[in-house]
Image 1 (cartoon, rainbow, N blue to C red):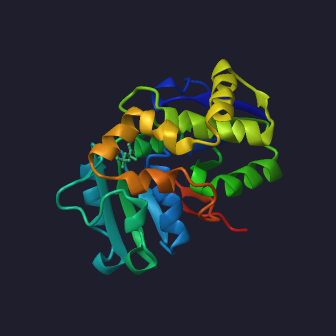
Image 2: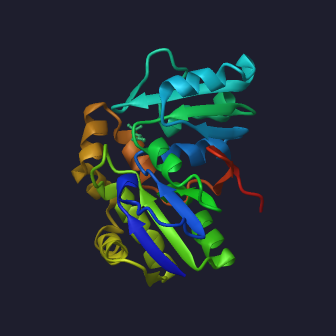
Image 3: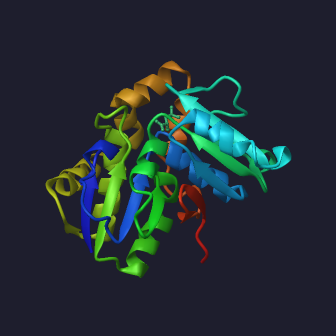
Length: 238
Ligand code: 3SL
């Protein structure tokens, strides 16, 4: 397997899609998607655009949908829920479709939605992702971080690096070498790294220290979100 790391969706090259794309938004969209599906959500449908989300979700039964909207770390007015994994409890999301739009994570999902296989990763489901990639033995995998509005983010690249390192895969680009090195330096202190990260600081200013700690924990759920139709993620079957 050859691993390519792209820090942001903007850095993804315009060339044919790889065998598998792994989308990462550790703080917090892909951590939250894993929590939502592990807690019984029927599926998560991602939208880059809030208006499109509102239009599409209108056609879904009201008692079977949750609208999740985040901008700048805060819940969007008029939406049911923000983007904290703690809000996605079995009572709230069980059996429901989550219509989700976040600042960066859902834009990364759109960028590689045409990949033949697309999954999402975070530290909270890292072993599920690792086992899937190992079992399927893809030739070429892209790890796509979400960053923040076009810039690099430490938390996504360190998670991409963790997967590159744990899979012991071949490096496809320089970014993969750098990401694995970043992980090796910070593996034992991810919360410390998140506290240095610009989006970590933004979330701390919003009093979300608990979210940072949760997002830094390995394997809180056994869940592999996989794209089942364009923009729709569900739990991969065992
Ligand atoms: O940028 C995103 O997509 C979000 O995950 C940001 S937040 O952590 O919900 O603020």
